[in-house]
Length: 281
Ligand code: NDP
Image (cartoon, rainbow, N blue to C red):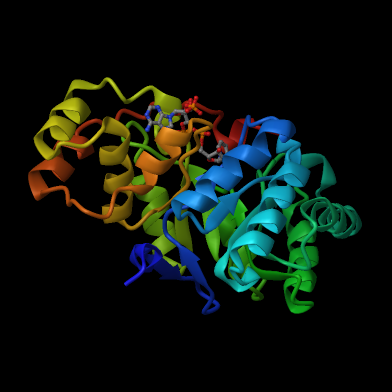
């Protein structure tokens, strides 16, 4: 078996396979994103998470193009996600913004397109979703989903009777375990994807985490990523540091015990690093 055979995939609700562990590039400047994504692809990651608002779709696209050409890896082995920014919501604006993202990424299709935030006060996500369904039907996104959607926002999309979002990407880490939202997602066939899975680094010195890490001879970040994988989350840690990029992918040779999982479960304290979706418009 090649080393990449170890990547777990999940099957989304339309049959598309998505790697459970991917690489996030928020706050990576465009000019640094090419090196970071190249390091990730070389370390074995096959899933990359960007967004129009990150301003690095061009740098990400450059890394992808070079990697595919130099390694001979087929495009279908990669899983590329981007997201529609809030100011581009609405049927017409979404279609234009999607074209622009594809152009910047220099791709014919993305694997997953997400509405970045529900922005409930604007109340435009239902119109936006109609455009997403059109993009899906045209094959230019293999799957469509949402990010930062609360159950009541998801329910309105489900009630349209069309495509159920494949993914809901939300803030999720040991301090914000999102059990209610995860249950809602699962009940509707929606996969939960964890953003800021390491709580942006804030959890790495937590004594419960460092004790588990010591017991397994692993780093704290590896323990937290493993926790996500064992819960069934899709997880997209970010780093610009090559050693950390590789370490965060080296999580398939150990397993957390039930006691480890319980100790991490006890860290849940509704601690957010980002805004609540209902307050972000
Ligand atoms: P993470 O929780 O992934 O944490 C990233 C931070 O942890 C960086 O400071 C990084 O440092 C550090 N770090 C990473 N690995 C290690 C390690 N092994 N040891 C020590 N420190 C480490 O934060 P993000 O907020 O970036 O979330 C991940 C991704 O989720 C984003 O990049 C983005 O793709 C997505 N996201 C989506 C949002 C949404 O609204 N949909 C919102 C926020 C994030 P360094 O880089 O310096 O190595």
